Length: 101
Image 1 (cartoon, rainbow, N blue to C red):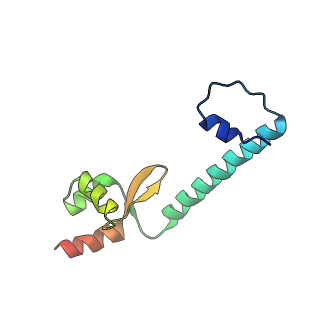
Image 2: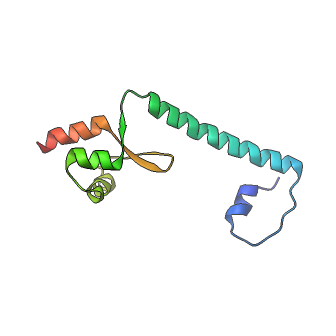
Image 3: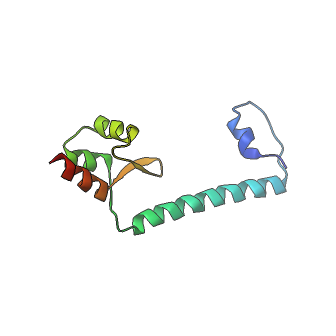
């Protein structure tokens, strides 16, 4: 079986003929990936720890967005990525705010 996803990511200008079995397998891969993302997002939403946007976190800590990015790179404040968007745990922000004061 050909991995259709690899072909699509190769950025080659090709024409392919796909069997129904390969197409079904590709659709299954997409569905499994979507379900995984939905489960991660549901777990994050159900978590007792609220997630804050970059703007909210920067405002609460009185720092710039770039500072938040640097803190993530240096391990000071780790981001949580959900759907490709950066979020920060409120508990981490509160812990860090307590250290700053």
